[in-house]
Length: 292
Image (cartoon, rainbow, N blue to C red):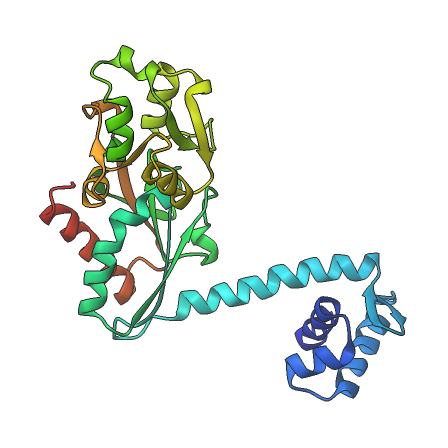
C-alpha cells in the first residue's frame, strides 16, 4: 500500500460521509473518489465502507485505516508549521502554548513584538496538557514549574511569576482583609477547578483553608476573574494585572507562591529566525520589567 492519494480520499469519505462531499473537499470528480475507494479495497482485500442510501459508513477495518490516516494528516500539517519561518524574515504564524493563568502577563511582550514584526500572527494555545513540540504542535512553550526532561528541547529561564490574593473593593468593604494566616479561614475564595493542581500558590492555599470556603471553582481564568470582580470571593491573580484592574491586594505576598517560568523550544525550530526573535524579545522584556 503506497498510494497516499487513495488513503487521503478514503479519509475524506469517512470524515464527510458521502462521495460528493469528499470530491468537493478534494477538488476532484466524484468518479475519482469512487475509483480510489475501489482500488484501495481491492489492494487491501477488505471492505472499508458500508454503502447505503445516505452515503458511506466506515467498517471496523475502515475505522482502523482512518485513525492511521488522521495521524498522518496531522503530522503533515505539523510539518508545514515547522517549515514556515525557515526563510530570512520574521513573518507568518507563531504557535505559542502556555497556561491560561500566564496569558495576561504575556500579552504585553507579544504586543510589543508584533510592533517590531507586523507580519507575524500568533496562535496562543492554553491547555493543561503539554503540547508536543517535537510533533510541531507549537513553536514555543512557556511553562511554569520544573519542565520535563527532554534532550530535544531547549529550556531557558524566562521570568518569575508573582501572584497575589485580590478582591473587589465591595468584597473588602463588606468583609475586610485577612491580616494573618489564621484570618484566611474567615473568607471566601475563587480557585481553579483543578484541586490537584501543581501551582505552588494553590497548594499553599489548600494547606491553610478548608475546601468548604471555596465558593467558586472555575476551569478557566476568565470565569475566575468574573467571580472575583463580582465580589464573590478572594482569588489569585498576577500582581501587576490585579492592580491594573482596580482590585485590592488583600494579603501580603508569600514567597512560597512564586513560580519559575521557562521558555521551551524544540531543537529543530530553535534557530529559525522567528523563534529566535521571539525568545530574545521575551527574555529582554522580562529583564527590562524586572520579572527575571
